[in-house]
Image 1 (spheres, rainbow, N blue to C red):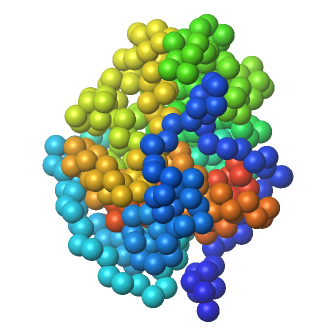
Image 2: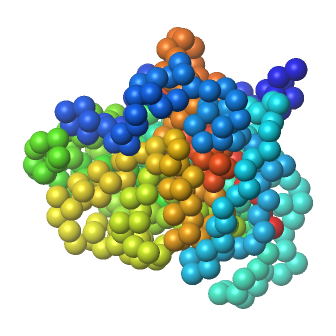
Image 3: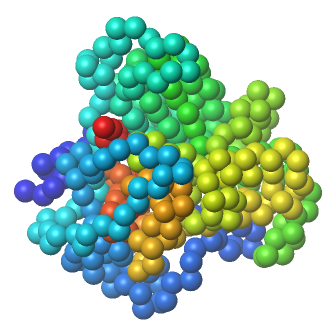
Length: 393
């Protein structure tokens, strides 16, 4: 019996066939990935040489763990109190699948209201914590995944009481209804707050790209690949004209206020699997302030540079991955990095197999000596849109 037989995942909900989409690219075909030696096992240049043993760093199968069984959280972290510690080497596993199972949906106990809500500004009981991977305009898939976890009802309204939900960014581009996704997340944020929970979101590199395409259009920007424009890069990366035409002022204001990084229950939440966040500040507040100030005051070249930095990826893959993840955790706090941005089929090497079959993504992927968890299930390449419950104290 395979691990998938023991822990079958729910069938993904689809709005139709998804066109294959490669990784984000900048004009002239350059996409941001660390230069990995061609003979490094598991590198894009050598997909067939990936080891199948227990190496937790760059084996497609090494280091995977089941979330609820093997991901204890010992306390709430703050940016000024990092709780990262180097892990012990993982024990030998005879069956070590590449993914971890999705957490349980909302239960009746989770929905039971507190006897009395605490005064405003005072902490009160918190509900379970969920994270949502890259959506990229696939509104039907999002509604299906949220409903499956008990977070919304059949009409798409918040039904999770005091639960907490974080979206990891990339709402638009490639899929059919990016503005519909933004409208839904904004709606859920209001409904969750009224129920004593919350629904929040991070800024992804596609939010920067989408806003840049709206604000700067075809205005030239200085790129390391040559002169480019936000609109050219946006179209190259799946920009949908109908999303741009439906973008309104309240969408822009909401998107520009999104944080770039957050910390919840010891989980360091990012959009991109990159260490570029360290270039914006030494604390979560500094990083978020720097991004917000840039979007408020700076020009096209500065916006472009931020987009370029947050489009980098694969920092936690390979021999240096645990060190890169550890540097972020030591700086900002937390036990593990939880990110979107890089589709799991690329991290595991399945995307390079070219079998003609949709990638199999049963759940989030944990790697880099168990310091990083990937949440982009590859919905744009007929994978799945992931919604996972994280453990809480």
